[in-house]
Length: 385
Length: 195
Ligand SMILES: Cc1cc2nc3c(=O)[nH]c(=O)nc-3n(C[C@H](O)[C@H](O)[C@H](O)COP(=O)(O)OP(=O)(O)OC[C@H]3O[C@@H](n4cnc5c(N)ncnc54)[C@H](O)[C@@H]3O)c2cc1C
Ligand code: FES
Image (cartoon, rainbow over the protein chains, first blue to last red):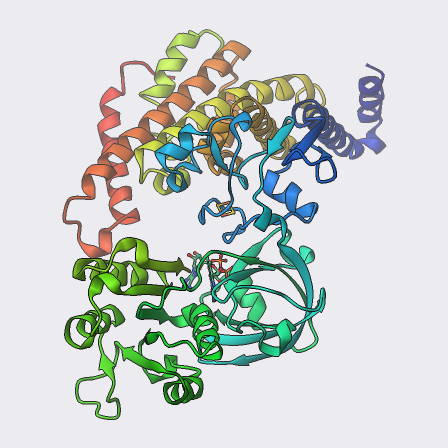
């Protein structure tokens, strides 16, 4: 009431007339902000929540509620695979959490019926509002954070950069070829954003002190664009290793198929086979549009000579019919795979193993072709980018 | 204007004076969110809710603050601030009470802040000098009217997916044409009631 008397008094004196609107606006603005702050205090305050991990006292902790479980865990340096960076599109961040309530509509596309029933959630979509009991598999608890410095960042092709990271703290990484790391955006540019990138270097290459990545850029993506601007000496943070895309040690003939940056995990796996003097027959199909999309050609030429039974088969889809400079496979890569298995492959299709990496439409195409010929679906391993 | 029955205002706001099809306010989300029936429904609910809330809030602010101090000229600024705050508040309440609904409405709620139909309702009721109850009826009615219109459009666009629309007219083009035809059809209600 006092305030309104002051305001009225102010508006009555002609000289202060211009002050009234300013005061009124200020008061309205203040009142609304105050209301929102009060509302936030009552509505968005979840108090302290106890997070119990594997019933281990030393891992369990108490945290302020209101944040996503994925972020809370990563603040505590517990890293759960989250290739899409928390947008509910990769489905990697699953944990069983019956006490956190039913899955949200955003999660359903990534969960099977069975998982919905047993209370599996995408933890990037779980907001912590009460005490939780988690069971996190041991191998996930071993995932570490690495501080790195960019060693080099060169063009492999017109749209793929080869990023070499030198590990500083800890100074080496142990991983199984085929696995990936997650690249964290610096908090001042995009807090909490991270993306998965497969490791292209192999086991014990440079004693595990370096990590090589192949990163496709040039389509305006947040993280890939940022990575393309990195210069030697820049500091970055990665976490890893993650993933179960790796060689099944069986001795069966391997059909490897990649496109674009899908090169990375297969380079790692194949170099590892070479190092182990593996006797497996390996055929590596690589799809691209034209010669400009091919890279690491020297490596493949060398391995064709030195490995027991390895061949590199690039297939290019945009070569003109009258262009004689290209003598390799033409057309989409899944058709090259089909021709190979049908016409030249000596193993039974049931005995083959598939290792596929690249853009989802390419993977779907190759899976369709391979299963149609008779390669068992459970023997086709893939990472969709 | 004091004598118009609030119930008549409600009906008129839904049919004869539909905020979207008679005044062409709120066209942007109408075109953008009417691709799927489910999203259109979510947007309709959110708009109706916020429209009702802001119409009454803005009426109070106008009558109790702006008019006594002869500050009617500030109404644009003040109404927008009130709408923004109200949307924030609604977001918080929904997030707390129903995470599922919150996820479904997700992007639509913040979008409403800049929906001109919401501001339009607040401004129109001022011009027409409605009482509190009349404003409430006008807010609800306009919201329901907008909701109905976007649902109808979503249904039509769902069917159009299977028809052969000339390339240049696809998506927004044909949507605008349909909106025009719908507006003409709604003129058929004119004369039943008027405000
Ligand atoms: C297991 C795993 C391993 C991966 N390994 C690699 C790797 O070794 N190298 C690599 O480059 N990427 C890899 N990816 C993909 C990578 O994680 C990012 O998704 C990718 O770099 C895009 O992130 P962004 O932030 O640049 O784009 P965003 O900002 O996330 O996306 C921007 C837009 O670009 C679109 N988009 C996303 N990817 C592409 C694309 N490739 N081409 C065209 N448009 C696209 C998106 O649909 C989106 O609309 C991997 C992904 C997974 C799941
Ligand atoms: S679904 Fe990708 S992080 Fe949760």
